[in-house]
Length: 236
Image (tube, rainbow, N blue to C red; front, top):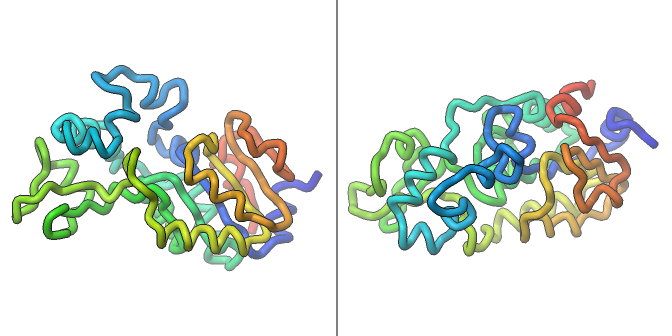
């Protein structure tokens, strides 16, 4: 069985597909881990709060949760983010496809990032489309309002909302044209995002995740170790 170092050294159109586990080493909680958001106690389950219906009918509670749990603005990129950025600069990684909304890949220097679920760093007035950054949202109170009176909504894909078609098309194109797919830090339980992996037809799949996933049996190499440790050890 080839090592991850060997696989990366022998491929030149690599795509990384990642989830929440990529950012846990930066201090951002994983929704589904034993100490993640889904296992904490709130008046409503996080899946309910992070839905379009809840945002529409209970905006005060939505924004309280959003500020408390979604805006982790002190987090910094970890070894995984930094190595992926280096791989892109070396010309061997063509894209990062992420389910995360924290912007840490861009902070690390990655440029070709397809954010399937949007970003907390982009927030827009639903009325006039004026842009507001994450710092503004963090320090706002109640339901944040634009100067025009409209509600400022995060550019984050909530439950019940579709993924952005342009982002999906771009991600599918990069996955379909890749020769090595590295899947990291994701349980592959969230659809339609996880469904994009079906478009891969390259040489090898590497699976890096703390717990087993449905793709372990399809992977050329499966590693159940911290992703920052795994990717950080790669020599380019």
